[in-house]
Image 1: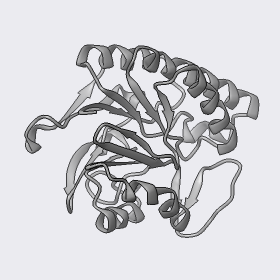
Image 2: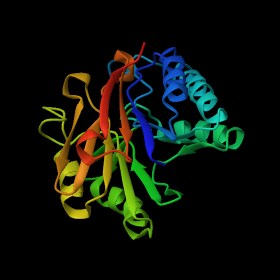
Image 3: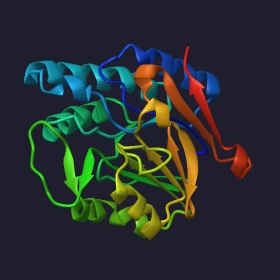
Image 4: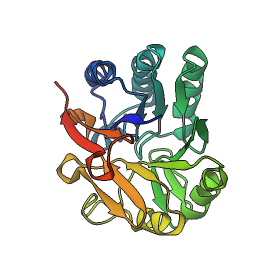
Length: 238
């Protein structure tokens, strides 16, 4: 798993998955990683449960077509993909239909020399139960991620729905994300974030990538086989 197509925040615009599928094929991606954000946060509170279920079902069916083509496809929920139990239930069903599709929320995925795990939604200091937002406490997130840090694989990839503060996050950045990076030093951290803050930077020993919003056609391409200063390209799909 050397060549990754990184994306997130499709915000209900499922037609963008056709562009993603095309790019994965043309770039010969080993994996597609979706950092969360199927539902548009601005529209979440105006959507009823039936509309949400149809959107998630259609999303998993569409992104499953990438996995069906033989590309490992890893998916997280975003902060507005709630209730989380319904999102995960639909995702688990599609996992059974597409062996290359993986929900990585609180779940370790290992492939060759890579270990990958994620926490979807907003990471908060304290537990906040909600039917309309995915919120995970810091302690629970650290519990979910312990198997990633304990993995024997040499390359560890952390996937989160929120960026750290600073260059990649702006005012929407989460300081807890930066604290995780300072504490655990994964090889790579893939985060959700706004297109205006898309980019990459080194945080301690970790390369952090914000691909921007798929709703804006923004993605990031990561190639571990290249020199460290040439591993990331920011792309607009067309």
